[in-house]
Length: 66
Image 1 (tube, rainbow, N blue to C red):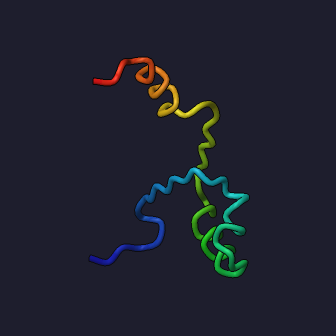
Image 2 (cartoon, one colour):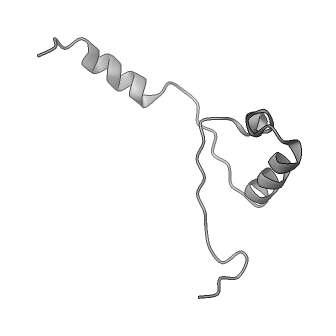
């Protein structure tokens, strides 16, 4: 099946903010190429607040071990 540009959707999630990707990837040219393709025409949702895992861990950490 032939898929044309712009005919589908891709969801990418990361705990690393975009501004830190260049350092994490380590190669500026490669990082630019990746970010250009991912961020162009993208909708970004930046979540704030504590991790739900941390909140859930606090709820269960007071329980006595079996």
